[in-house]
Image (cartoon, rainbow, N blue to C red; front, top):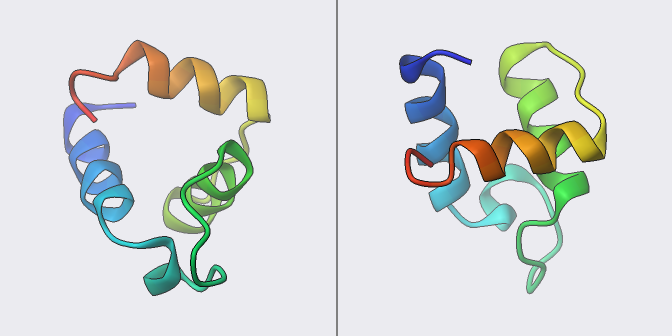
Amino acid sequence: MGAELRERLKAALERSPLVHGWDEGQGWTLVGSKALIGRMFHVGYTVQGVWKLLRRHRSAL
């Protein structure tokens, strides 16, 4: 994932999950993050893949 896409993802994750259609009071989960990435970028990641992606780019996200 390139720097521009990471910035778009970072901005989306900084917004409340409620803004993206998840129930009120629910924070970002790996499953929710996976769904958001799929919606935004039309790619499929496993939950483990999302965890690795977020972990690898934690300073950029």
